[in-house]
Image 1 (cartoon, helix red, strand yellow):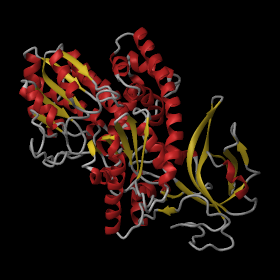
Image 2: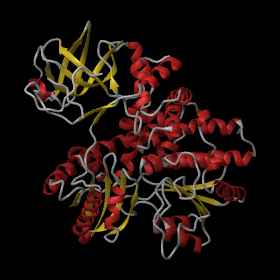
Image 3: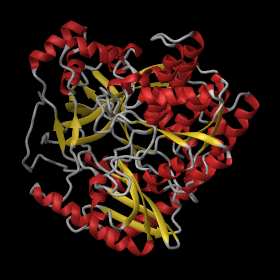
Image 4: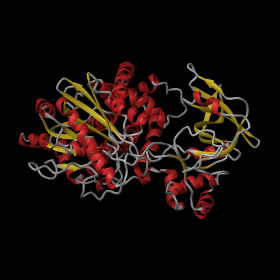
Length: 606
């Protein structure tokens, strides 16, 4: 246990900078059993127990993340109906329209199905809405695209569960729809009923679903349809070599979608992420290879989760954020190296442009946010601006959520109407808050953590008031005055004197990290400086320090903590929230640490 724990402000508490800390405390008997059965170091066993992995057999499965753990796709709602209608279309030579969405999830899922139909020799075209002109999900543009191409079957990817009106229009024209989606089902429509009149709605979040794991992303649901159709086509559980090769390669797209759509990395999602990252490293796809190169990943021994979320994902997203996702889909469907390189360069330039736009909008959004700084009056930060590029409002909402510690809704207005995105903090559903403004929004939907909306400019003020009134009522029911940001949760104590290369290799087994499988955060108490701290970086905003405990000394980097250098006093106990990391320099790899926060003096744990 930590050497010193207190919540008082005694004279030795030299600083109160940073968030509140919370330390998880596991059952020691469970830790001992897991450590012995799986040959794990006690801190790693403690971390796993704290995260709910108590049974050795299940924990071993979690660590191995074998593709054998994927669930049967035929268990998905309406999957049999979807396969039967799709078989009819393929055998009858019908034109199929694959209808995606403009983010990474929709683009990769669209690519999976288009590659499947190419393998089958089926007649298929794709369509993704233009963010600026069409909005998200289905609309009149969907009907027009289907008619223009003579499509008699539309398959949605990452959307469609709420598209009552459009799917009804398609049906009236004799065009069937198969929905593959992962969004929450809508409230029933008085005019259209419980759900849209699609031939099949393949969505594990439907109320009637018995699928074992409902938290898949849209790309994964599209993959499930491809897998199910391969089994349906061949009439066997084990698919032929051509389908097996296709599905294994398609895992690379599923990994990109899973990691970038921030779904929980548990159960199937952990398998998709790990297996898909391995498939991504092996892929011969010229588009992916070119994209990895412009992202600076081509020389890496293996591609990791952060490489996808910070390197590959933003470049795929850039195309859709600036309007049309056409270039992104064409890149992933590219069949030759020259075309792959050309399109990767296009996406890279778009990403540079996106970053510049984002910087300008963020500055304006911060100014607007200051008007609503009062958390008790405005528990939801709701800001809007004319001319804010609608392709970056989601990123801006995420930034404001991080900076202000509360959910944010950001609206980009273009004249009389606007489109927006919402992001939330752990433990609070921003979608629930948005229900309060159902009368003001033209359209809205999404998840607890992220949502989108469309709204008229003259309804923004009323929507802000309604969302916050609804949220304040929710808080009052729970005797709260504001949405409380979660504390900094430390997984377990791992003294620097105990940290080793061997333990770090066990940490590596927990990868890939992401939503619901965060990179471990450890506590080391009573460490000391080994030399003076140094402010580093072009603007000296970062902090570099050597930390000693017992005979061990580790170099530590603390990003954006340069201004806190004066808090570190030689000879004074320092307690750190840290992550161990490998650092390779000039061919030599060694263990270092990243500081997420530190305390000086008495250790304060909630």
